Image 1 (cartoon, chains in turn yellow, blue):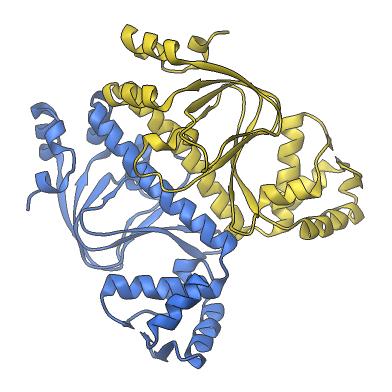
Image 2 (tube, each protein chain N blue to C red):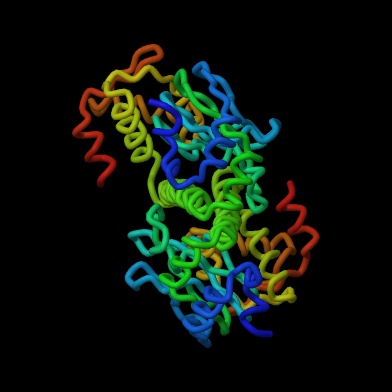
Length: 219
Length: 219
């Protein structure tokens, strides 16, 4: 499949806009673990994922992390081009969680198209609204859900993404996703293990009772 | 001043769009304390504030609240018209914190204009990006700031909005803004009083040392 098949409003752009976009497109293979965008970098551009997985997170002054959202095949990353939008006053860091093939649309090219094309601007609106919904979901989780439910939900989400109950993930990494501390997560996972919901070994968390884990989330 | 002076991209709409908007406009006086929009209501429309103050918040199943953002004179409230945007999957409640004069632009009228006008769609984009920045700030506060700093920052914000160090606000209300419990806030405010930063009396919190309060926030 080509870029045209991945970009949802391709048919709504005129030929000039289509050519401008195709002519400026950058194709990249990103290795797992690479930081693609951070606040110390210039405006990276919009990222359209062909295949792979990205994670957008924020960092505290003390170096703590929390995942804001994750993007998968065919998703578009808008905030790596936040310089396009005057009103964006926060900085996300974006890293590849898996080896990722993506296209970069340079910010100034996209901005120009968005300024003249209502369909492009409205598509951008929907993208932002979808990420806004992710963030509102996150606030509800942080505010009203206890950590055991959040850890359980995260493990189930991981299992669903990986299509496996054996998760190759460190306690540190779980903590960074959830904005918690490694020690706290380790304690919680040991409690889960005692309850028969997971089995822990070095670098691996195996879900042994996903039904019980689901019940915990929904309590 | 008329609606035309308040609506930032008025001059970028064509005459048909301008007339459509003016013809559908609803003028409302809202009493302090009124819930203007909630998830049980239909799509209320966009709210353009002539004068007054609105608060957007979310509610937990258990009835706890947390303020997501506040809007003032000349601000536009987008999420009271969230039905316009397919990707919005959360529900805010919006209440008048003060007597408020506002215009309501019906959602279907605004949506139609946004679909055909790139300037209108881009303006909506900037609105959403501004609210997104508010929400990201909130996440950083919740995640990395201790409650004493958040209470101190809230009191200083209130004093700035009210242009007074004597705040007519209940402990319950402070708790609802910050997503906390009244008991917790009362304990914190008594600690502030012992430290000489505030003086408490029935229904009133007086800031007696804003310098010390500011220092606490910035620690």
